[in-house]
Image (cartoon, rainbow, N blue to C red; front, side):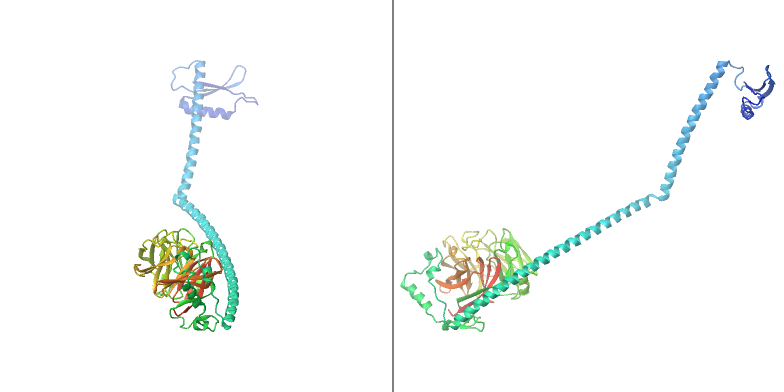
Length: 504
């Protein structure tokens, strides 16, 4: 193969000598020692360099068209190789980039990356917990402020009410002292006015007979000196003292000890144990708000001051709901009527267990034979010096009060009396020294203790002992033989009454 290259010796050469030398070197590499370089002038006097290389493959030179085809093939091969080289360089750069990233990743380590994320998450959680804690603290502080405000308002209301009560008591006491000093006995009103509708038909007394008039006259003409003495406080007291039994002759003004805070305290029952057992004392007080269909909570107060301030020391939750306001506490147990049943239940307060249950045979319940104010007061438990009693009525008794003494351990009926007092004609009842007393009205400010039934003689009689319903809705009245007082619940208010007994 022979290449020709012309070089002009003038000042404008066609090809630099350096390029010729490079071409010569290339030819030398290709053709080894077979390359030849010659220089001669052409016909026009221009200098020509002739570079001759023997072909390693071809025995003879191809035609001009074939040479151009070879050159084109070489150019295509060169372009293809250059494209492959660029692609290889791009892939190599990509691999180097990936290798660099992998090297950095391995240097940092997957565990460190995971630990960093965990630490960031833990920090965020701590901040969230701190915010939640601060929110709870603010809510607690706000609730405490509201509760303190409510307590202060209740205390203010209670103090105002006590002030009014003390003023009324002072006025009443002054009038009572003046009356007793004048030596006057309370005038006996016509008992026919105090007998509630429906009671005359079952009374054994014919109000128009001579026997009744003689009894009325005898009761009216008993001198006060034979029954009452004046105590240092101005209140009458029994000639026999406060420890013995006797007949009820006087009920004092109500003393308000506590006012319920909510609508559930419209009516209820509160009591102290007349026969306290360890760990309870004569100061321990229990209270039940009986408004509602599922009454189970029994609030217990160790001290009277706690009861007055409304801070219970314990809250019992009964295993089954109770009904009405007839519950009592006796000998460390709570006795109550189960809701919608004629069953009486004994619940031991210290162990919070039911010790006995007993159905009262034939007793009306859930509105069959209630007191006149209603409240499902069909079964009313009571305590006196003789023990535990239950007051109720039956179909056989045709609505008259039936009275039974109960065994406080197993609730067996020990003895039963049927009276001639219609249960629905009286507002409430209590027992003192084995005698049943009834109250004429639950809403009249000037009611009376209007009937008495003596279980010792099996006889009843009409009475007219004044009884004040200060708040005009007495839903519970019970006698406490230890304190010799009546406990009552009068329209949200828990009150006590001093009483006076005389020799029967």
